[in-house]
Length: 417
Image (cartoon, rainbow, N blue to C red; front, side, top):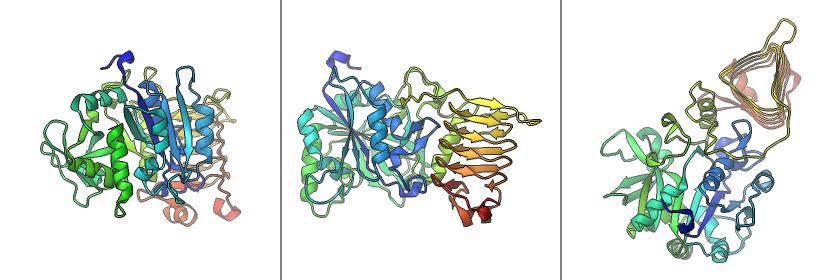
């Protein structure tokens, strides 16, 4: 690994303009990277933490869709010391290349080439903003430099029957990429594991000259979809410049072996819910408790969580994450995430529930396999995740049967019963 003094100049670009339609209703009022996760965090905190922990602290966040809460979070949370030129800054769509918004991930960078011209980096990280994982990006850059690649794509193995949702990679000799297939109907299996496919994690490192040249070429191509996975990477594969970095080789300080290689794309309600359930296992598939590689976020001054007996009802909490400012009064809480400021009433039952900031759950309510967004008040006695037909008439219900309730949802008297 390169010593700090020998590290080349790097600019990091985090793509945070996604609309996140498949994550509705959580994205009705906010950009996907701003969706809360794991109690304290926002989705974007994971990509930013990996870059900052790795020592890459010149970071621009490209935003577009409903970006206000995201911009506020970045400005309040990610205040790096400017003494050594470090920064994290949001850059909204500015129509620098014509009167149109970003047409795709590649166009988002093309419209902001001025940022690259100002910083003059040797290499550029391009990371997605809405995945849950830990990664030391230094190791990926080291391989990129050693291989002489024009672009290196971080890859991870997934079951072949799930790979159609992603960009799929066919490896050649060594780290070379033989082909890149964007969301193919029939994903290729691996030679050593036919039921698995190597997919793109949405993290890239580019040589600056290579990236700028290919963006200019794509901008001149009227048939281009202006997308990194759909257009840029296949073009660089054809030019023999694309390589793949095997994420399973990435070693993060402080991570136990059983969490090594963990990565989740939380683009749907089901995957978002499943990622939360990964947190609450006795031996979690992804642990928030790694002091050597912390996930950074906004520090809020709130009192500790409190557990209160209510008459004869003592609180029972197991395999759950309970954040500061939350109060659990005589409730039964299992395999759930309770975010800051939440209030759980006497006799309530929470079983696999994701409760976001300042949610109030009334006495005797029952919540199973559900996500409740911020500031919602659940009336006493309400049942969610109990009657599938009733849930579908009132709320969003995923393919996997997870009930999702929007931010600031108002219950009518009949809906609460």
